[in-house]
Structures are given as structure tokens and as C-alpha cells.
Length: 153
Image (tube, rainbow, N blue to C red):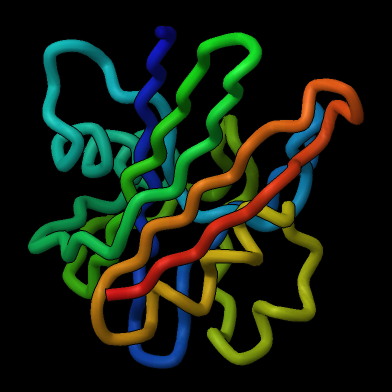
């Protein structure tokens, strides 16, 4: 079994969230800060580090919102993305980031921005009570997302 761990941290300031306008590689669109968990750091430490590296902000008091995972039974792969929300931050926002330009976006207008399906699918769940678990099974034949299961608690 191959496991890979990632984090995402949605930074919220009132009616606005901080997103990165990512325009490189095959993962274009507006995305929250996040990235790979480096061993042996914790998932929370990774989320804090990624926000700092990608936006310049220091977040604190992260709230766990849920798990988003891709599974590929044919290749024995499992990619797990731990999702957090932070409403507490300090620091100066970077002008540009290697991952994309940091921009504050109204939560209600974000749905109209270009986003990957994986981001759009979980975006509203960051602002609901409780947690979520989303599992996406990869379809090797079609080389795309297959069955999607969403559970909210």
C-alpha cells in the first residue's frame, strides 16, 4: 500500500477566504494553501507551515474540518488530505507565491471562480458545522475520478 499525506488550510477573515490563484501545471484554478506533510511533522504543523510558505501568514487555532482522500485500488494507492480552517492569523501577505497569487475572495463569490472539482466539492463544507469525509475512487480505465462518497458528521 502506498500512502501520501497532504494538508489544506482555509484561512477565513469574516466573509472572505484566502485563496491562491494558481496558474501553473495541471492543477490550475483557485485553491486554498496546502501541500505535502513532511515526515515527521504532524498534520497541523504541516498545515501551518504550508500557509506560511505560500501566503506569508502565521495561522493558529486550526479547526479540523475533514478528510478528503483518493484511493486507487488497482495501484494500491491512498492519498489523504487533512483539511483545516483557521480564523486566526497574523503577518503580512506575500505579493506572490510559488503556488499562485494570494487573494482574498468573498466566500459567496468563490463558487464562480475556476476551481478543480476536488476543491469545489469540499469548499462549502469548510463553513458548515461538523466534519466531512470524502472518498474518491480513481477510475484507471477512464483516467479520471470514479465513485465519490461524501459523509458529514
